[in-house]
Length: 234
Image 1 (cartoon, rainbow, N blue to C red):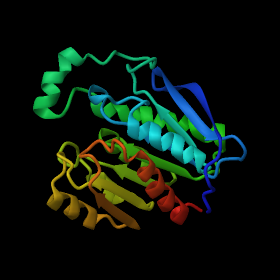
Image 2: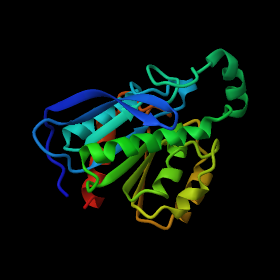
Image 3: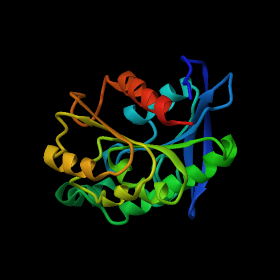
């Protein structure tokens, strides 16, 4: 597949069901052509600014749409105008900083599944599906990629110390992992050990990228992810 040069894009506000909740999202796609593939973006933790306006999620959503892909970024349940229990920062923040977890957080994988279920028929179920996770969102992708025919998987700054990533060993699609060399959540030895166990076609890219946050490096991310998808999408 050949990803084209930048094009003008359309961005639509959408709503879709995820379990009992109706979530909001932004669907972006090139104005001129049918999408070459569809991308669902799962952002960082709701307690740490995990919404569809995060710089990494928005940068990739808009940038990949300009390259001819349809992208869907969304707000998790209870965030923004997405239905569900509101994110109670005051109640959970102290527990989160102590344990890196809050009750029920891993159920948010169902929000990712809801996004996939919405996007595929809207843009064409035959188009290749790409899952991209950033930070906490990476940990939510394994249940989806093990039950869906996913064409490619991208993990950006996965906090391996905080959640269980063993299920990714069962993934069957090409995998790109992007890490900032100065990421405060990352143990380099554990990263390498986990990455070496992955049996699929894989690529690990490490560079100094503003710690965990990639501020100012959004265009670079788009270039790297686009190059990976150009190689692996059929």
